[in-house]
Image 1 (spheres, rainbow, N blue to C red):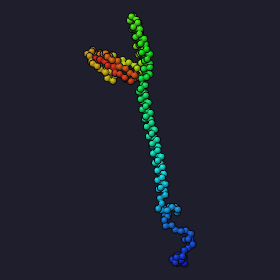
Image 2: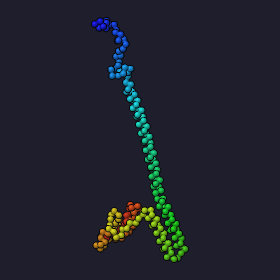
Image 3: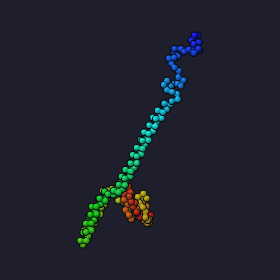
Image 4: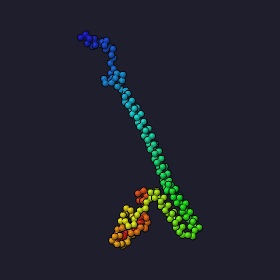
Length: 190
């Protein structure tokens, strides 16, 4: 009872003097942190700002890299289009040389047999050069009419065995590497 009277009288206990009471602390926070100072929120905010800056930099670099990729592929596409036929043209130069020699021979020679043979050789070389590049002629005459392969110019009356079939080929069709590059223009029997 003596101690309670001393507390009431304003006398301090030696234990009370050792631990001062801080009224600004919360029991859930460390003793050195003030309640009005949100230190953890500022550090979290700084960390989020740093992370945002990193992601923004990463995004800008990725966008620049993609723009470079688009420019590079557009340039390559233009170059490819400009030189797409180069290989074919180079291989046809030999045929052009042969045609020029045949034309020179026609002026010098009166023998039509030699001229015909020379022209046949030039045309055969032209066909073989194009076939080596993947060109294949379409065989249409005598086959069933197929709208996916043939373009009907006209129909003519024909016998029952020729009905629905290609009777004549006005313009030959061609495949390039198994893809149709020109439809055959045909006359169909009805």
